[in-house]
Image 1 (cartoon, one colour):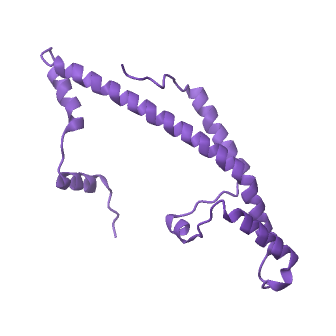
Image 2 (cartoon, rainbow, N blue to C red):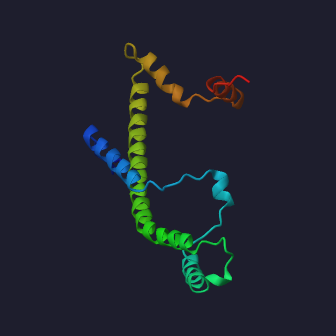
Image 3 (tube, rainbow, N blue to C red):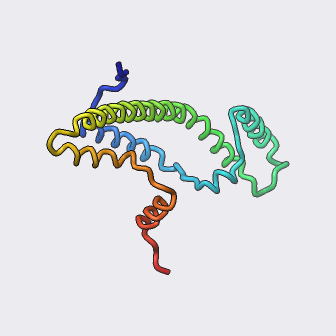
Length: 164
């Protein structure tokens, strides 16, 4: 027996409400930035253990600002550290939600594909019925093996080339 973990629908109204809520979240945080892969790679790798270090350095900067270069902005560091503290629970909640959505999507996708394979097997078993051979030929394209050359050619055909 197949395990059916997901049996649900998402109405257009609920989907629109979710998308609206996401938009509301984005609007509430207009300071969000997007980092390129290169920018992420160039950024320092900071984990939870570094939190105490940053807080201690902020305290040191506030108490001994005379030791710092004039261009160093202690208030900007304070704002960054404060933002980290404020965003952390939001990050945890969104990560949990993203994980739930991802797991549900993955489960539903697996269940749908398993059902599709059962349909395919049933159709193949009855290919002697009128018109069924055409359906079987169409469905078996999913399993057609393509060599690397064919795949590269089809990919190059589907990617538009910009004129120089």
